[in-house]
Amino acid sequence: MSSSSQGELKLQLRTIIAAKFPSFIFIRDTSSANVAQLTLKQVLSEQLSSSRPVFAFVDCIACFTQRLLFDSILYALLDCRSEPHAEAKYAVLTNQKNDIIDDFLHNIRELFPNAELASTLDEKDGSVKIILVLEHTERLKETLPRLIYPLSRLQELTKLNVATILISEDAWENITPAPGTLADPYIIETDKLNREDTIERICTTFPKDTGDAVSIYNSSLEPLFRHFVEAVFDVCSPFVSDPIELAYIVAVRWPGFVSPVLEDWKHQEEGPFVAPSEAARIQLLRIFNPTLMSAVENLYPRSMGRSEWSAVNSFPMGFGLDDLRRAQLPSASDPSIDATSSVSKLPVLSMFVLMASFLASYNPAKTDYRMFGRGADEKSRRKRKGGGTRKTKSGAIAKVPQRLIGPMSFSYDRLVAILGSLLREDDEIDKRLDDVSELKVEVDVHRVQTSASIRELVSMHLLHRATAQEKLEGVSFRCGIGYDQALLVARRLEIPLNELMWEPN
Image (cartoon, rainbow, N blue to C red; front, side):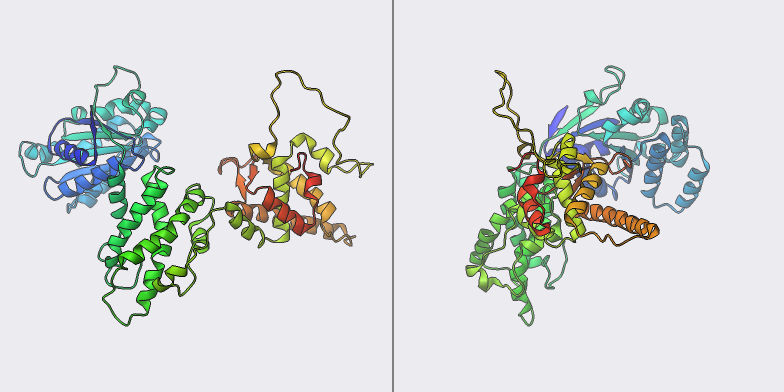
C-alpha cells in the first residue's frame, strides 16, 4: 500500500498501465475532488496514441444490476476502438446474452479475441491492454457483492491483458465481502489536495484560446484569475474544504469581480485589452473579500441561487475601475435581507401559506386545536393555562424554546388545516356563493392555487421539503424563514403573530 500525492499518483498509474501486472488495483480517493478519476483519465488520454489502451469508466451507482454493469463495460470498451469493423462488433453485442458473468466473459473474449491481444502482449511498444475502472465501488457490496470476486480476477478468467481498477472513498477492508476471500489488491491511497494543488486544479478551469474579445475569460485576465482564486481559497478554505465547492464559488463570483475591467474595455475602440494594474487589483480584492464570506453562508448550503446571489452582490451598470475608490459593494451576508426581499414580492395566498408553515414549524402539533380551533368561547380559545408558579423537580432539565432549536417538520395535511384557519379568520372571503356547484368550483380552484404556491415557495427555498423527492405519500415540509421575516409577513396580512404562537418571542 502506498500513499500518493497527485504527481506520484500519475507516475504510478503510468507504470501500471504500461506493465502487465498488477492486474487488480484499488485506489482510495479521500480528496473529495475525484483526483484519482481525473488523473487516471489524463494518463489514459496521454497513453492512447502510444500503447493503445482500451478502457472503460463505469459508475457503480448507476449500474445497480448485472446487465447494466456488463453492458456499460462492453459498450465503453467498444467506444475506445476506432476500427472499421466496430459496428459489426456492436451488432454482435446486441444479439448476445449478457446477463450473467459467464456471458460477460464470453463476450469480452469474442469482442477482443486472444489472437489479437496475444500477438502484441510480448511487444514493448504498441501492446493492447484492457483497463476497467469502477467508480464508487462501495456500492458493489450493497447491490452486487458476488461480482467483486470475478471482477478482481478478470485477467485470470479471460486470459487477456486486463487490469481492474476500483476507486472508492472507503477502505478496502470495508468493501471486500469477507476477509481472506480475495487476493489483496495493489492499494493506492491519494492524499488530500494541499493549497497549491487546489489552486492549480481550479485554475485549469479557465478556458484556453478564448481570443481577444471582451469577455470574462479573455486570455489577458488569466493572471488576475489566479490571484482571485488564491484570495477565494484563503478566505473560504477554513469553512469549505471541498475543491469542487470552492470552484463553484469562484465561478459564481468571478463575473462580478471582473465586471469593472470589462466596463473599461467596452469604452476602448480596439485592442489589445490589458489586465488591470496592481493597484486596481488590490482595490478589487479589498472590496470583494467581504462578499466571499457571504458566498460561504449562502452559496455553499445552496440557500440562494447563483444568479440571485450575483444580482445582490454586484456593481451597478456602468461601474468601471475609476469608480473603485468610492465603491461600496452591496452585500447579502445576512440571509434575512434576501428573504425579506423575496417575501415582499409574494402573492397574498403565498404569504398565507408561508405564515401557516411558520406556525406549523414553531408550534407543537398538540396545540393546534387550542390555537386555531373554533369553539363556543372564541376569546379564550387561544389562552394558555395559568395558575401561579410552576414547581419543578430538582435535577430536571430546562425545556429549550422551539425558536432556539429550529423549525420542526410538519405534514401537508397540518399545513392545509392551519392555512384554512388563517384564511377563515383573517382573509376577506367572498361569502356570496349560494350555489353549491359554484362553491365546489371555487374550492377546487383554491386547492390548485395552494399546491402551486407550495411548489413556488419550495423553489424559492422559503419552504423546505423534509422528505425525499420520490416519496409521494406522507410529504412533510419545514419552514425556511425566521421570526423577523414572519413578523413582516404577519404585519402585511394584519395577523396577530404573537397571539398565534405557543411560545411568543
